[in-house]
Structure formats: C-alpha cells, structure tokens
Length: 116
Length: 114
Image (tube, rainbow over all chains, first blue to last red; front, top):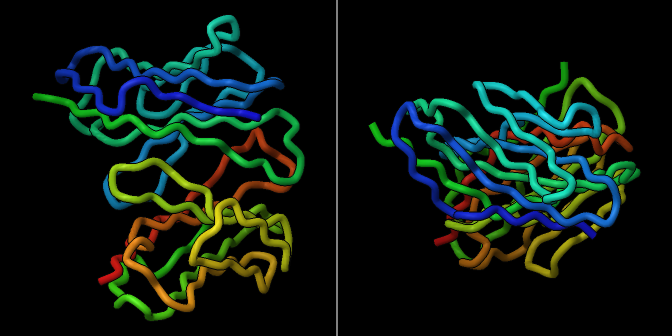
C-alpha cells in the first residue's frame, strides 16, 4: 500500500523567497510520484512527475523536485516565489506497474501563501 | 489531443433532490476514470473509479453512485442529496495500465446542498 504525508498544511513565503513544500511517501514497491497545483475553483494541474528516470525532476513554472529514496521524500522547490504561485499543492504517489487501475494516492495538500 | 469535460461548473441543490454530474473524455480510448471529492479545507477523497464500461469500484460507502454507460463517459449520481454531499467534485482520467502518466483533471463542479 502507498501513502503520502505533506508536512505543513499552510506555508507562507515572501515574494522572491525560496519555496519548499515537503512530501514524504510510503510505498512497498517502487513509486511514481507527482506534484499537482490547484488554483481556486479549478481542477488540478500536473506540475511534474518522477517515473524512475532522473531523480531531479523539473516541471512547469520553475518548480522542481528531487526524489530521495533513502529519505522517502519528494520535496517541491522553487528558487524564487511569485505572487502567481499562491495556490494549493498536492503530492501524490502510485505504485510503479500498478496495472489497470493506476490509482493515485494524494496527500492532504499544502496551501502556499506568497506575501508581497 | 485529449480533453476532459465536466459539467455543470456550479450547482445548488436542495436536500433530498437528485443529482447527476457528467464527465466526458475526448481524444483517447479505454481510459481509467475517477471521481474525487474535496470538502472545504480537506484533501482529495477518491469516490469511484472505473477501468471499463460498466465496471465501477467504490472506495467509500456513501450516498452517491457512479455509472459508466459509454467508454468515455462517467456519471456521478445521487437519488437524495444530503447536506454532507456539498463539496467540489472532480473527474479525472488516466491512460489504461499506465500509472506513470498520472491523471488529467476536469475543471470541477462546485456542489452546494441547501
């Protein structure tokens, strides 16, 4: 079984500061890992994904995440926050080779606030 | 390219009334389909998923049901809505057998039961 824990339901940063959103996963098999962003009253948009290739994954809008197996982590970072980054972010995991269902297990989400 | 359509965008329904939310996918065949709910201040709860026509798996017991009458159509229903059914409902699809692809989400339906 897989699970995801996002540390911190709310994160606040100043514009231009480093963004760090934490995600730890649990999986008994090699995982695929994802970060999604959700703006108010919208669906979720894929930011980036790890699928067992490079451990440092670059996504859209300047975000990146590093897969660290030893730490079972997949933290999301961005060097410099923009006001437009304010949103809710979800980390998700699925088992590699999960067959027909491909079900994603989502974390509880982290709301990112960017202060001017 | 693949697109996913979800409607309506917003809905206000009285307690005890029926519900029907529809989701359709274009540009792909045999998708896995999912219904999620977001209650205020909470994460995503998987309600139903489907790997084929007429094949529905329910994740949690509840007042809702789902159907897949066609390959690319997924419907969420209720015979009698409860106040606790309020929330943001999201439909999503993924490619069959390809967990590495992740999901593509619809734009969601905001349901308020009054």
